[in-house]
Amino acid sequence: MRFDGDLRYVALGDSHTEGVGDGDDSTGVRGWADRLAVHLAATGARVEYANLAVRGRLARQVREEQLAPALEMRPDVATVFAGVNDVIRSGYDADEVVGHMEAMFAELTASGARVATLTFPNIAKVAPLTKPLLPRVLDFNERVRAAAARHGVVVADVAAHEISTDRRLWAQDRLHCTPLGHERIAGALASALTLPGADESWSDPLPLLPRSGALRTVAEEVRWLGAFLGPWILRRLRGRSSGDGRVPKRPALLPVEAKESSSDA
Image 1 (cartoon, helix red, strand yellow):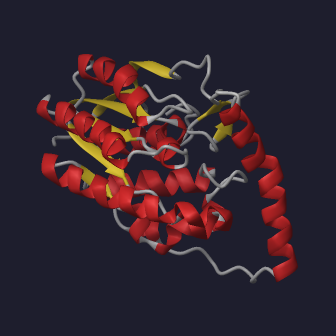
Image 2 (cartoon, helix red, strand yellow; image 1 turned 90 degrees about the vertical axis):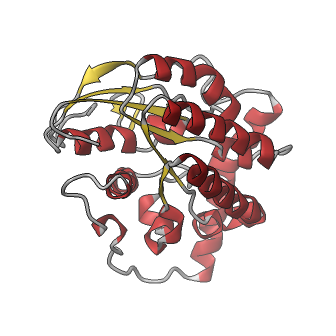
């Protein structure tokens, strides 16, 4: 991949790619895809970037709604990250979900794009009450790695690094990343794509924090259950999604400046 000319980057996915947890709806969300676009621009390339991700989308919806528009943009670089919303739902079908991921890998790489994806961290270390879902997550990661290998897709294997489960990288809902978490993911992707100037510093550990006592840990879990897991379950029972009525935040290719201070990349 050359960095001395024009470069088109398109991001496909759900809330993680949209940038939830890094900013808010009043000021706008940023996220790792916006930050990766800045990394690309810092190489000296003239980068145009579109983000088609919408929160709450399942892998099937990402494929149905975002793949065709992405292909029309003829991206040089594309990121695809979906499936987490599927994994945490009842009725999860691993073959179907990863099948949608692989179909996107196949079509984007066939178009000439350099495609990258991520693995999802050990959620049991981030939110202990989700431990029953861990086998699904581990299996999902293995399937994604295999599908990526079949199509020459770059994998930023975030799950293989201890830093990925540091609570300081995770927002209060424990499903989305903080700005620091999004920054680390962008660094992981920049490194996996072997961008000039990228290195493995994204995986460096943070300073140790005092260990929480048992009572505090239990209290935190109870608060999380009431503030986040409960409302999520209620939305599912009502057949609603956090992405209902939403559209992509950056549906067209727009120029990117190589500076971190930009709020929208």
